[in-house]
Image 1 (cartoon, rainbow, N blue to C red):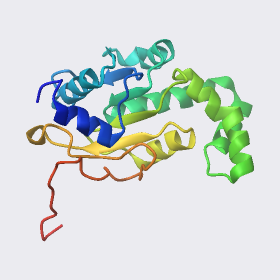
Image 2 (tube, one colour; image 1 turned 90 degrees about the vertical axis):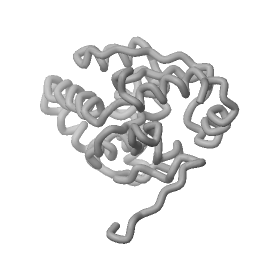
Image 3 (cartoon, rainbow, N blue to C red; image 1 turned 180 degrees about the vertical axis):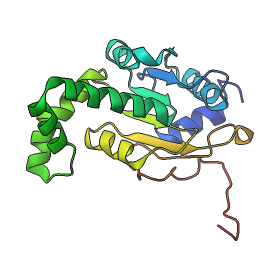
Image 4 (cartoon, one colour; image 1 turned 135 degrees about the horizontal axis):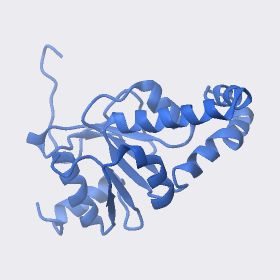
Length: 196
């Protein structure tokens, strides 16, 4: 499928995942089939992609590049989470307690306060424009997905195989179900065998 393919452009519109005003920060190797599919899809959507493989710079690069979409393997989101937790620990006991309190489910009023005290700062630290992350190539730990969801940084988990052009299933913006890889990509036929 070439990047100007009407089928690819239609698929991107159907999934509501990429827009021409997005900036994609790719964290999958370009030799990886999903990395290639994402690069092709971003070209078809008319949006730029930034690529960097230095794990130690990921959070700084997020703040500098201000991407709206970040794709990567679960280990990348684990690294970001680990960096955040380490920073909170360095900030002292009071910050740790506030962070632990904010990292729980709350009612509407306390969720607003948790957002003001913790989550808004986290969103700003990763550039302030993230619409969602995309995770693939391995299962994402539910606690990592829940952490980012509470901060209004949803992770769209997906599943695919090289043999199926990498993307077979993916959660959609606004309808993420943590612990699943989402519904099939339009045009994909799937079935579950009798033994599950």
